[in-house]
Length: 487
Ligand code: BES
Ligand code: MN
Ligand code: ZN
Image (tube, rainbow, N blue to C red):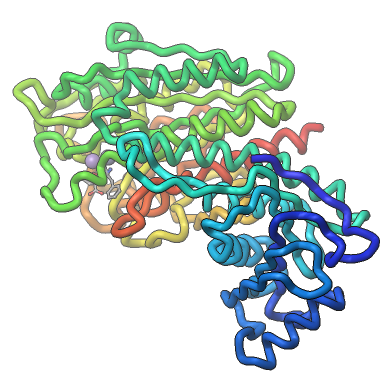
C-alpha cells in the first residue's frame, strides 16, 4: 500500500480524481464539507433521514452529481481528534469493503496534522490485516493500492511526516500481531530467533541469538529454570540498532517471550489456555518496535532483548519450592511456576546492564491481576522514575496507545520474603500486578527503569481473538521522542 499527501484541488473536492473518497465529518462541527455538490448531497441525505451528524454514523453515496469521484463515503467522528478520526476511518473503510477501489482519497473536514495522518495509516493497515498463516482459506480483504490524504497546502508537510511515521508504526504493529497470532507450534523460540535475524538482515540491525549453553555460561539460572520442562530449545535474542554515536547510552527494550505458558507444574486450568500462546506479546512488541525504528532511522541507539522459551510441566520441570540462582546472584524461591515471566525477565534485566542504558523498559504479559485492575484498555505502567514515567505516558498519549501509572511503594515488597532464598517469585494475591513489578525492580538498580504490564492489551479474546500489536505505537513514539530531545 502506498500513502500520499494530495493538495486540495483548486476546484475543490468535487474535482478530485480517485476511485473513492472518504469524508470524515467531526460531530462537533457542521454537516458540511465546504464543497457545494457534496454539501447538497449531505443536505439531501440528512433531510431524507439517511444521515445524521452523530459519532459512528456512515453513509455511502454513489454517483453524486457534480462530483468526479464515483464512490463517496461519509463517516462521522466524535470530534476533531486523531483518535476519533481513526475510529471514523475504520467505519468509513467498512462501507467501502469489497468495492473495486484502487485509489482511495481521504478528507478530514477540519484541521489535519501529523497525528491524523499517522492515525490514517493505522486505520487502513488494521482494516487490511487478515491472518492467513495457518488459515489459507481466510477470505482476503482487497485494499486500495494507493491512499491519498487530501489536505490544504499549509498542512502538507506535517501530513507527509505523519504518513511516513505512521507507515513504519503500522508495519511494526502488523509484525507484532502476526508473531503473536502464530500458534505456539509455529512461533517457537527458535522461530522467533530466526525472525529476529531476518529482520536484522532486512534493516541492518546487529542480531545475536544465544542458546542454552551460552545462557548457562552467563549464569542465567532463573531463565533456564523456566525452560527446564520443555523439549523446545530456549533462545536469548539481542538486537541492536545504532542511530547515534557509539558512546551514546542506548534505550533498552526487554520483551517477555514465553511462546506458551501452561503454568508448568503449577498448571493452569484448561479453559482458555490456548490464549497463552499470546504470552510472547511483549517480545512481539519489541520486534515490531525494532522494525519501526529501523525503518525511520532516528538518531538514537536502541537495544531489543528477548528471553524466549516455553513454560511446560515434565519430569524435569522446576517444582514449587525449588531455589534457583539468578544472573544477578540473588537466589529465588519459586513458589509458583506459573509466575514464570518475572523469572525470565530478571536475568534479561541483569544482562541489560552491560549496555549502560539511558533507560530500560520491559514489556510483558505478566499478570492476570493487571487485567483485573485495568481491563483491556490501559496497559499498566510501573516506574520509580518520574521523568521516565512521564515520557512513557506522553508517548502513550501521542500514539493513542493508552497506559496508566501504577504504584511501586516498598510496602508491596513485603510479600516477596522467603525463608529459603533472597526473594520469592510470588507474594499474596492482593495487588498481584504490583508485587510482580516489585520483584522485577530488584534487578534494575543500575539504570532508570520502567515496566509495562500488557496482559490486558496485547491480545483480544472471544470473537476478535488475536494479537493487537500493542504497545508498538507507544514504544516507537517513546524512542522517537528520546531521539528528538537530543537533536
Ligand atoms: N502469562 C501469565 C499472565 C496472564 C494471565 C497473561 C492472563 C494474560 C492473561 C503469567 O505468566 C501468569 O501466569 N501469571 C500469574 C501469576 C501468579 C501465579 C502470581 C497470574 O497472573 O495468575
Ligand atoms: Mn504464567
Ligand atoms: Zn506467563
